[in-house]
Length: 155
Image 1 (spheres, rainbow, N blue to C red):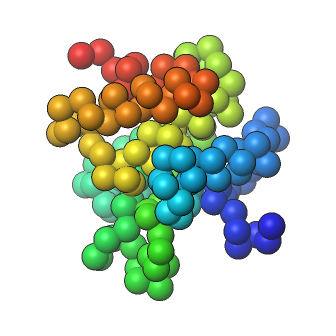
Image 2 (cartoon, rainbow, N blue to C red):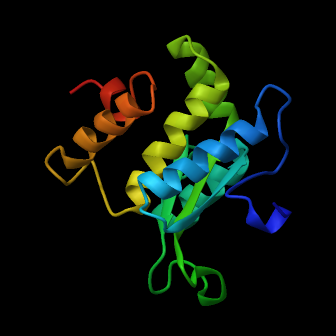
């Protein structure tokens, strides 16, 4: 596997994350959830997530995960060919949420990748009458993950 074949990339990879395990997980998601369609995931810091959130959503604060479905004007054409979309995750946010939920950083990153991928696949828990929440619960159970992002937010 060459470096160009990676789904998950890091600005700075933390020692407590197993890069190979996360890559295997992302490949399984690509086959099962994305039905073979490619996506990428960048794990980075709060500053970059804040910039992306501000530039693309008009929200000037860092967040845990952002999703960018491929489509006209969203991802530059030279990068979007055959790409379902891109996900960006804040490592500091993931670390804090992992501690809050009493599970490992790797588990939290897996939850965030799944959540981001469902958005990239066209789901939106804010507007879809529970479709994404049901899908996230179903996939979370299949993948042996604890409560997902949607379940953590009080109704």
